Amino acid sequence: MKIVFVCTGNTCRSPMAEGIAKTYLPQHDIVSRGIMAQAGAPVASHTQQLLETHQHPVSAGATPFTNEDAQADLILTMTSGHAQHIRMLYGAETPVSTLSDYVGESLEVSDPYGGSYEVYEATFKQLTRLVQQLQRKLGTELV
Image (cartoon, helix red, strand yellow):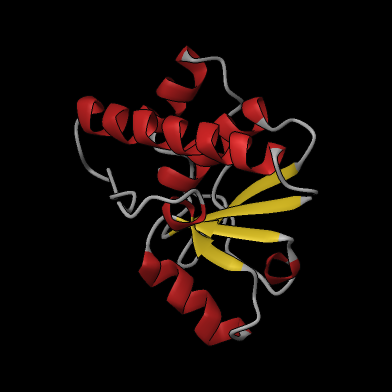
């Protein structure tokens, strides 16, 4: 199953989700993208530090969301705005949901960009919990 995590710039939230998910869901093809990503922009330093500290892989850099990504089995966004943007560009049938909605929660993942290490750490903890819930959900579904 190909899973694409999406945020705005692909430097904070979606690379965190990608790294965490690659650890918890190694059997799946997992990538991250940004709806407004500048190709090759580096992952935020706090994101990189948190992923490395917790021994999760770190993506090479930002990658924009493409037509190919819209063909993934599952597209999980950080906010409802990201999901709406993808549906608007690629059609209502695109398999997109916010990560939180997909696992049965309602709280979106706020952007830590420009925040302190503690702000990034709070986002990291939220994403870890959501990815653990995703792991449980996918473990009970045929994939």
